[in-house]
Length: 295
Ligand SMILES: Nc1ncnc2c1ncn2[C@@H]1O[C@H](COP(=O)(O)OP(=O)(O)O)[C@@H](O)[C@H]1O
Ligand SMILES: CC(=O)N[C@@H](CCC(=O)OP(=O)(O)O)C(=O)O
Image 1 (cartoon, rainbow, N blue to C red):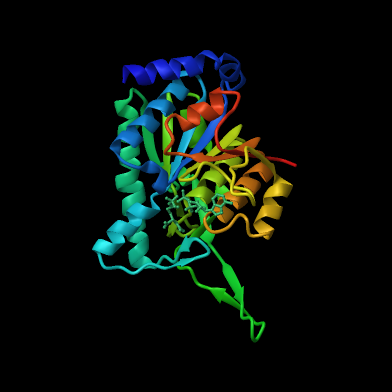
Image 2 (image 1 turned 180 degrees about the horizontal axis):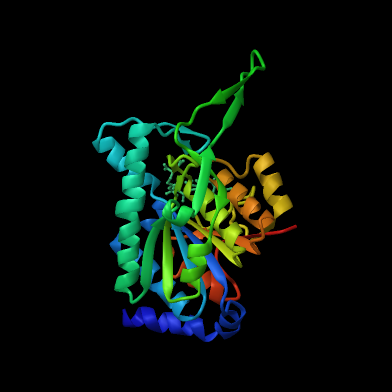
């Protein structure tokens, strides 16, 4: 523990200009299910988030929990399928999703933050109508007949209105909001929202200075397999078009581009399992991961 602090202090000795730059800034942090790791990794993440708040940088945590939802669905013998990275969510599944995300995971993160001296408050998109959603519509074109079909993903939601008033209250106080990506429909339905999408929508509504998407790779890799430190919107589009960015990295980059269009200064995709990933990104000159900014 002592060694850990000495290393952090050395890093932080270079941090003053960065601390000044982010003084009072809003930083939305998406903590993915794969990035969460074990209890020790969660405690390390929590320590860094609390330190950030103590430095007057305002963290807003939006979490995922895909692997943890998967575990409980398996135990309950409920089958689950994905379309374009989104979980097809029937009535039984959405009940489990809300239980896992707004229950177990949300409270585990809140508890970890509070054990490190923070004042964390757990919310979902239902609280104070934070994230109002509509059913996500996906279409696919049959290659033979060229007819467009609508795919029914069930209770998968797209945020259409974010009401950040409650978050503003927390941001201006000592509280750290921790948000589960569960949205509410205009008729009170429960919607399952992809964690990256939820984080992007919230960051956009808050006009956050930074959106940090924590995942299980060091950043966005280019055609040569090396992590790129910096890409523009145009480069991200071209890497998606050429297939270099694929799978789960596509919705992450799309979220980044949408968030920038909504007014977020820049988005960083980085490895949430790496020690002090968030602090290194914000408070050092070399940063961490891949920074995506407007072209
Ligand atoms: N160009 C790329 N650079 C980095 N990762 C990529 C790239 N293309 C595809 N990926 C994949 O995207 C994954 C991250 O997406 P995902 O598994 O959905 O993350 P999370 O569960 O953290 O939301 C990486 O583990 C990697 O396998
Ligand atoms: C619609 C949809 O797919 N929702 C996600 C919500 C959790 C999530 O996004 O978790 P990660 O960030 O850990 O992947 C799901 O059901 O898995």
